[in-house]
Length: 175
Image (cartoon, rainbow, N blue to C red; front, side, top):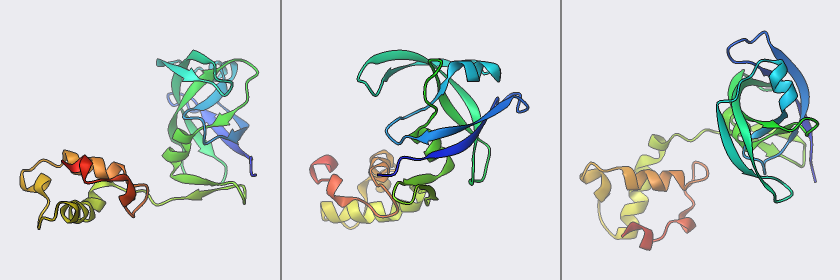
């Protein structure tokens, strides 16, 4: 099936004139993008944190994490993304966080990145309340009548797109 690459321009957020361009493998199985540390050092990127990772071979390893700007060929924007300082000689991987930042999903059959509709929590609020009320057999959403929307927010984040995945929300989770 469709593994493919996209050209990405990676630049230092504080010094955009420092950049490189490289072909990145699209890797939805990786949370973060993976860039050989020598490339990141050449553009003056400094790490801001450390992350414990499970690599593709199952090994656990702590790696440095930084933030830089990505421009993905064919997509609009120069967007800040987290990046892992990978060992020298590693593959360039474009991870799920960067794909989400750009608002795209992977179409592996046609080997392309497709824009997705961004769902903002408040947009679904009335639908969630109606769904919660129907599960509880009540007329209104108790979370909002008390002014406490935190439980409703949980349901919004459990939705995958503009349509709720009702199968993952059960009556038991509401009590």
